[in-house]
Image (cartoon, rainbow, N blue to C red; front, side, top):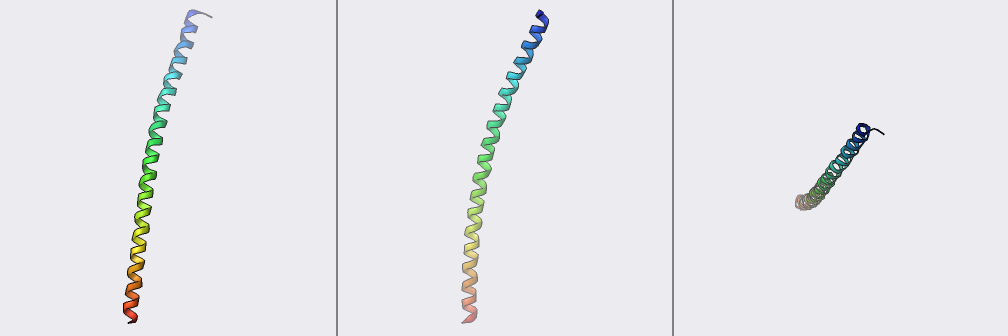
Length: 68
């Protein structure tokens, strides 16, 4: 194998190593972002559940007042 071809192959391997490192960092960022929005989604769902429960309680009280 000529020196130029060997150097080209070596450069390509280095580029692949860099690409893999970049992709690993990006994957870690995406996973962190996913964990963040999953947590936010859970908080919003909990707030929605609480709001729904309060609204149902108010409606029950209003119906009771209306029937009195």
